Length: 179
Ligand SMILES: [Zn+2]
Image 1: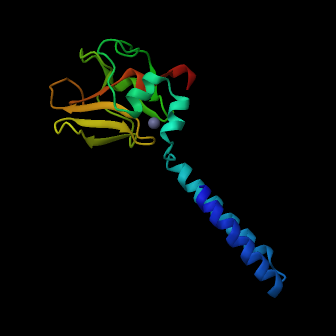
Image 2: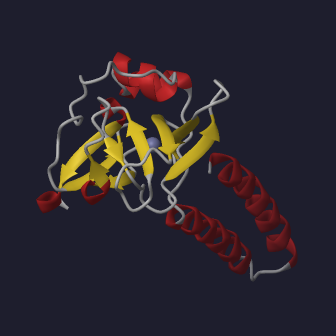
Image 3: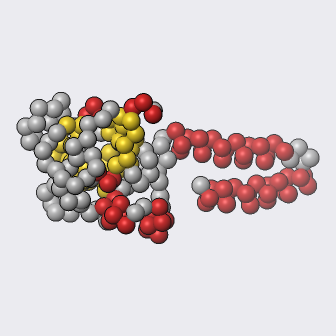
């Protein structure tokens, strides 16, 4: 937003000074520019604002292990994550940016050593072909944080026959009674 704001300010003051010489009704111009900016800003927020942080900024807010997994696409050791065998009712959000990703009602026991979900919240998860050429990587749609991989057709008795295999460290759980 700084680029738009930085652009709008000199433009509006330029119009302001030029207009004030020609036309005493100068306030209308500032008002229009101001509303345009506010409108744009509201629109982006409603679409769940993308989170763009530099590597340095992420390092400052994440633990070294969170940074290794979320930003460097690492994998936690199987069976060690906090949510591997965890089945409380609530919502799992991105540990990087806080956007809700999965409901506990879509979590199931896959026995693979990582939390497994059969479905993400609508629009919350992005999919990318993994550099290994075989798997599909899943990331937080808002901040691009690495979550894990998604597998299909493994025969789990779930509504989607998909398994979102997610690192616990990429998630932050909020119990249902705190929502
Ligand atoms: Zn995120």
